Length: 125
Image (tube, rainbow, N blue to C red):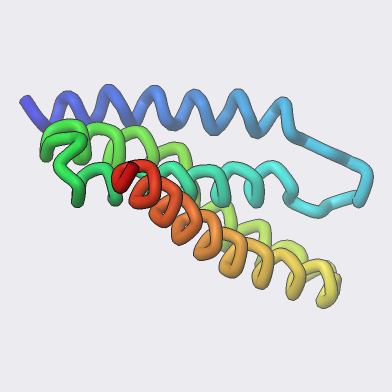
């Protein structure tokens, strides 16, 4: 039953990724993957928030699995990030590829850490 729930939430996460990916496509800087960057950073923040809520027993194991593994696992996308990064490198867009790599990793970590700090601060009040 858990597997079906994760699959259903994964379907929702994939649909959300597609929807927001279509809405975020900023073509101001041609070929820069802003959509995937925004999706992965927001997904990292949401996962950081969920992780803290799970640690603080604000959500249970079931919700943690459904939302963390299912929804956000499908919403965020390492494979698309890898593909887009490799595509930028193939086009010899080294600066854009470097910025994309650094922005994704650094902003993803900062987003997750910040969300965790905020949840813990709210929980203390």
